[in-house]
Image 1: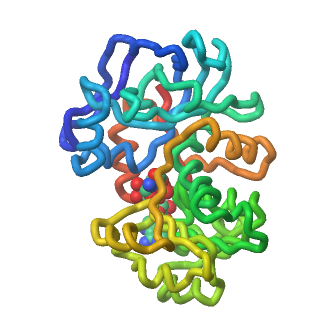
Image 2 (image 1 turned 90 degrees about the vertical axis):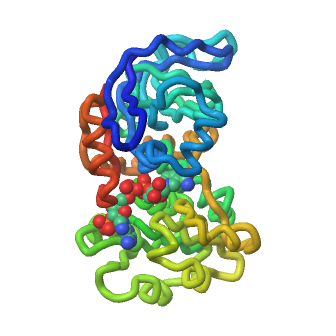
Image 3 (image 1 turned 30 degrees about the horizontal axis):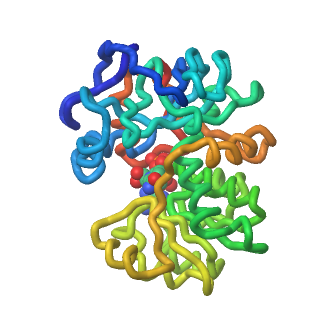
Length: 317
Ligand SMILES: NC(=O)c1ccc[n+]([C@@H]2O[C@H](COP(=O)([O-])OP(=O)(O)OC[C@H]3O[C@@H](n4cnc5c(N)ncnc54)[C@H](OP(=O)(O)O)[C@@H]3O)[C@@H](O)[C@H]2O)c1
């Protein structure tokens, strides 16, 4: 197999050959057809808590970044329930000693993959795992929007991967959505069914206040820009702020305030299946900003770091 790896954020990602990873009984080996790029992929290269966690519990050898993949099963472990030839979407998990998804082949547990109907392309599917699952967990496990009639959701960072997933999955759960984005993305956010608030025109949180209160504020930007206290003041009585981006100054609030939660968008079959179903039914549109060869992964990280990607960046092995 070949993978994209680098020893530090200063060393560009480069393709190298590695021996095939061994398969556990519940694992599948997947021929990767498309890879979704997430900010965590370049954050992982930069040191900090994520890289430290990888050093402690991740696989040994070179750092292979990436989580999202879509492709076909080419080998199945003895107890894996996805036979060879199955089209799947999934996410790798370094805490299970798995290498990342920037590769022509990945090994992941069958429970980390969902079956893909023929109507969904590998490119569409690769948009879904981390961003979609982050939105889905926030909406369901964290805010229980699936059990609240007439719920209202506010998403900060509405035009990014997490934001667009949040808008569309909120609609499938019957919730009304408000999305904060820049002026150039207002038309897109509204086309997908949210009320857009343009953050370049005045204070977006005050503009959102008039459209609340909210059962969920999904914060995909950072509390340095949109303060946690103001976000909490926009909540309904049982509402919750779900932090996809955590700053060190959020620690006390996370520890002590029941209305503040962190979300970890770890793809599993259970969390991927409802998102795949939403795409299959036409309720979820996968927006792809650009598609690059895996050999140009470094360029994809340059683009992602700028924080202006609309929808998803994809890599193709
Ligand atoms: N905890 C987790 O498990 C988890 C999972 C996924 C993502 N995340 C984190 O969540 C963040 C968002 O992820 P993503 O995949 O959505 O990133 P992304 O796709 O790179 O997001 C880019 C978008 O952010 C928007 N944006 C930039 N500044 C903004 C601002 N001040 N207000 C509103 N929107 C702004 C940009 O739109 P404009 O051009 O309109 O500004 C752009 O469309 C990242 O930091 C990522 O690491 C965490």
